[in-house]
Image (tube, rainbow, N blue to C red):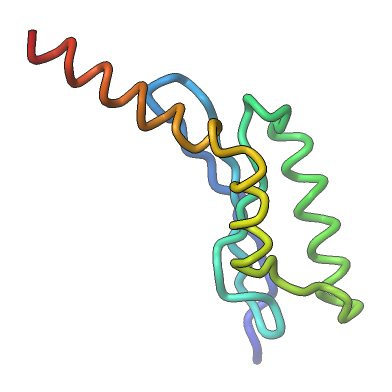
Amino acid sequence: MPRKPTARIREHIDRDHVVSYSVRFRGRGYPAETIPLGRSDEGINRARAEHEVRLIASQVVSGTWSPTRRDELLAEHEREPERLLDPIRKALDREARRRR
């Protein structure tokens, strides 16, 4: 008997208390990778993450879901390069303060 499809919403809290949400599906026909849903500083909360999971699951069942391609993710980050550098700068600042 095949395993019942399930979804697990993962929450990760970083040092700045920003929560990152992602989902991991288990079951035949579902994607094997972890799918990022967003961060709390982008307006994502647990309820919205659960809503996104239901949308993705319905798309998978209907056959219309496709994974986000890496080039699409890179294009998004090229539009917002400062967003990528902020965590790096904060980590470097923390490390410099710690070493003083």
